[in-house]
Image (cartoon, rainbow, N blue to C red; front, side, top):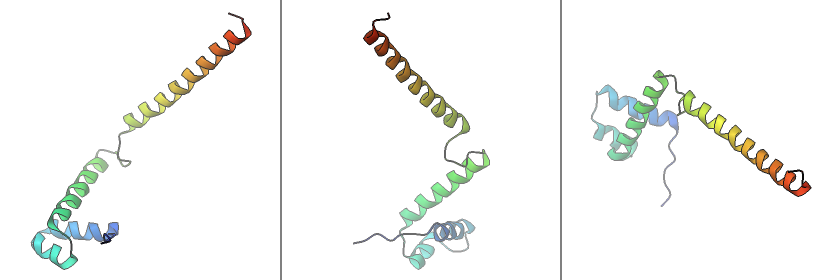
Length: 95
C-alpha cells in the first residue's frame, strides 16, 4: 500500500488546529485520515522547528556547527595538499 504524501501546508494546518484545542486530536485525525501518533510526531517537529527559528537557527543547525564544518573541509583539503607535496618531494628526491 502506498503511503500518503502530505503537503507541508496541510501538516501545518492540522498541527495548528490541534494546538488551538477547539477540537480533540482524535477528531482532527479522523477528519484528515491520519493517525494520532503521526499527528504528535508532526506537532513535535513543528514545535522544535519553531524553537530553532527563535534561536536564529533556520537551517536546522547552528551557525557555529556550519562554521566548524567549513573549517574541517579546509583542513581536509590542506592535509591532502601536504601529502601530495610530501610524495612529490620523495619522488623528486629533493628531501
